[in-house]
Image 1 (spheres, rainbow, N blue to C red):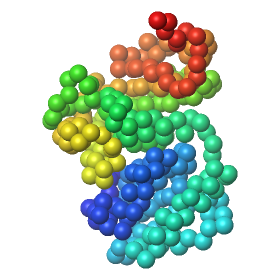
Image 2 (tube, one colour):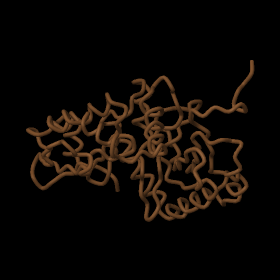
Image 3 (cartoon, helix red, strand yellow):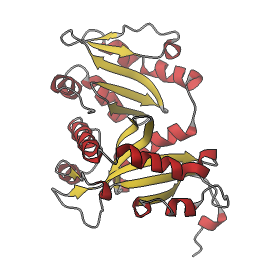
Length: 281
């Protein structure tokens, strides 16, 4: 199960590692994701930092891809004495990622979706992202989250888990996306309850770290939410970013044939502009 120990969580919340948490919260180009005993900090879809606990008290082990460390001399043992060196070098790490990292717009859009739904309270969206790049067996969900219906919101509510696949522009994989969603369904159908429980744990730890920027009353209500353990409540979401709807690459009939078709949703998002999306006044 993905989760951090109490000591790791405490250090990120109010110890010397809180410098990382605070930096992520004020820099929306970054996202912090909770793993099983470690965290990843992402920039433009690239893992800028992997940080895990060690057997030494108040010391954490950093892993940073060597190509992102060009021209930077950083100690990879992170403690109260060295944390400032990592924080002060974040601009240089970002510059190296800009030059040498993976530049998949699909990955960047994942991070933008996280920002738009988790960090922009004025949007008042109904979907909140809990995790990204969540591996289950051989499959990996781009984003996982929950749906919280704004017309029925209340405290202590049970909300559905959402598994999201992001496709950018005319990605050739769109033709077979029904097969991909079917694999996701198969991957979790026998352990949906455990999956939901793990997501709920990550959600609560992220709330404790204040990694959701929402109105205060909304945040207090979010702390009381429970994730449905019933697979029938899950949503399988295809997010098409800048997909040209004149294309025939997406075959909706294939999605309709899925045994769980009533749980599948298709979102159209992005900045691409086409005439059929214009509303005349």
